[in-house]
Amino acid sequence: MDNHGSHITEYKVLVRVLFVLLLCTFLTISVTGFNLGAFTVTIALLIAGFKSYMVLSYFMHLKYESLLLRILVSMVFVLFIIIVLITFIDYSFR
Image (cartoon, rainbow, N blue to C red; front, side, top):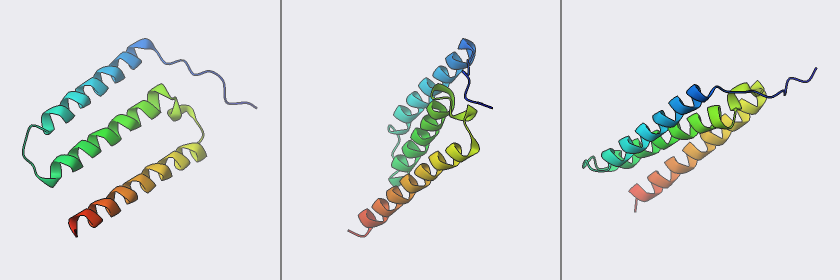
């Protein structure tokens, strides 16, 4: 049986997600105003990761997909985190 029917998300849910994304954007902007050293970039990247999770889950309907596809997308995030960590390690030893 085909489980890939249309998934209609209510507008009020999408509006809530939009407000959360806007709040996270303003939070990212406000974090850059503080002198947190290397943690400024770390916090900004964590907020950006959360925002991308929200977009993938709600606007791209990933939460309605199969477990395999969600695991594959999660592995892309893990690969991204590894690449960012390698970049930070390389940068710190220069």
